[in-house]
Amino acid sequence: MTAWGPQGVGPVASSRPDLPIVVVGGYDYSIAMNQVSTITVRELARERTVLYLHSELGGSLLSVLQGRGRYVEPGRVARIAAGGMRPRRVEERLWIAPLRGPVAYAPLAYPEPLRRHAVSVLTDVVHGWLRDRGEEACLLLCYWPELPELVQSLPVAASAYDCTDDHATMPGRVVPAARVRALEERLLDAVDRTWVVSPGLLEERDDGHRRLEVAASPIDLRLFERVSAEPPMALPGLDGRTGPVIGYAGGLTERMNWTLLEALAERRPDWTFLFVGHDPVAAPRALHRRENVVFTGLLPYDRALRAIARFDVGVIPVRTGAFSHGNSFLKLADYLASGLPVVASDVPDTAAAAARAPEAITVATGTDAWLAALDAAVAGTSTDDVRRARQLLLEERTNERRVAALVAALEEDRMARAQDA
Image (cartoon, helix red, strand yellow):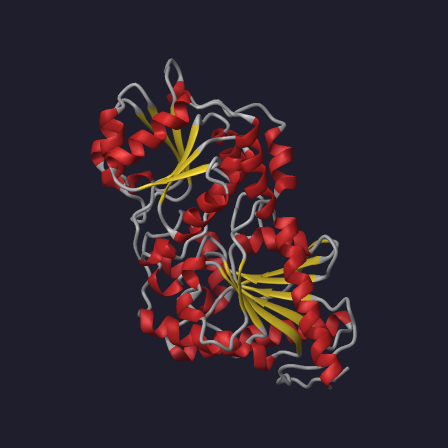
């Protein structure tokens, strides 16, 4: 095993099979937050020692101050801005360290002096945590593409990048796409391997030499089974309504195909279109005025799952563009686990699922095709073939399975480096 100094030595050789795992990037560690990074950390910490470095409030404080993030008490904003990053133990094997100080304000990719400061801060935090644990090396899992230097500044026995979005085309970004892409390219070259959540993310990242693999966004079935044992959530907006409930759960952003949704709601006035998520103000006023459209607003993930139980059909109506081309939808697994028929826009993630199990999900383009698919879904029954198709897709998207494969790959890379040393 290789020792390291205060500046780190980058990739190291280690023969230990139980090294701690450092996870860099993602949002709050909370049952209310359903993100790939958070549910991956939950699963990792069942058997491994984990340090999770993440941001709070669903993104940088800059986005909150600009009005693009969720409301937060001014006192908490001040504490985050002024505080230092100190790992805090929250479970037997899990420590978390949310961003604090100047790096909590701005996007990590820009400005460059602050980005380099973030690398330095996170490096010091990880070194100190490892030293306190008596550890000389770790496995590294990255979710943020903006800090490629961490692979070299930390004593890493194996590393991976779990790419959950096309970060350069993310709606609302304030950093130029070229800047994000350049940093991500450096990370792709620095890590031992990369997972992408959608086939749509492969082409631009595959240079013929990198090791890349598709692993769709997963579902935490343990959490789902606990929540689904509770009764469906009472939703006052549905009181007295009859007819099918066509439901969507997730962010209500510019990614949504609002033109399609307006047409669907107008042409099926006897159906209820139920939207579970924030920010309902992003939806067109015409939808807010319709009697057959209901918005619940932001719900914690466990409550959102109970609201999904009120759906008759689960939908994923996104515009087909650069960002959605790389999306993999957590809500797809939520719908499947809830036993719902699914109709979705035709993007690589949903198209791959439909090709794998056409009985479980229908992709559609255009209002008429959507209406036909929804009519069929409403009229359909859950046959044995349909249930088997849903189960097939669901098993492929379980968090337990995905994390086991991720850890096995990291261990394979660690052993290869140890043998070469």
